[in-house]
Image 1 (cartoon, rainbow, N blue to C red):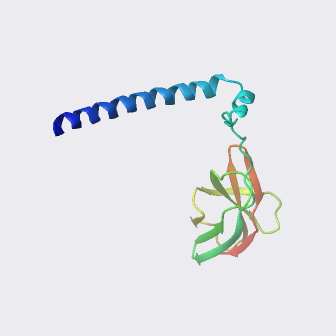
Image 2 (cartoon, rainbow, N blue to C red):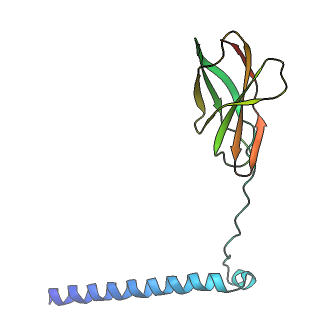
Image 3 (cartoon, rainbow, N blue to C red):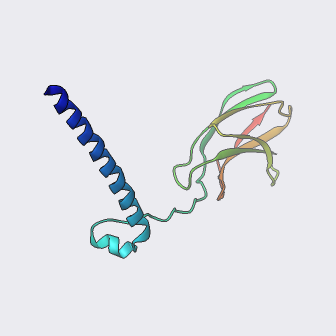
Amino acid sequence: MQATLGKEIEGKNKFMNTIADTMHGDLRYSENTVDADDLKRIGWSGRHKPTPLAVPGQARELSIKEQVEGSLHLVWKKPTDGGKVANYRIERREAGASTWSLAETSIEREITLVGQERGKALEYCVVAMNKAGRGMESNVVMVIL
């Protein structure tokens, strides 16, 4: 009798799982085909449209962690606003120059730049980037290697 009862319970559980899977599929179909206003009447909400990606904010608190002959270790904090950051662009220029040039890119919030020009005053900044565009330049740090 115990074995028969166990088989009956197992059969019932399989049947209930089949019904639940079917109902889940039907509900998903209903969400996608029924007008959003009709879904609101029964307390549901339809699928939301994806929000467009925003340009990231400004990278914060750029600083020099370590400076040795010919190399420079920079660290910074991620932006507090804007869209999600895909990567960071580290830019440099000679002190007093107006245009920035690419020094390196990074997906982390720190980088060691090697082989940098020696004997020149250089300024560095970090720009957060993603597919939507580039954020504002971070604060500038100046170094003479």
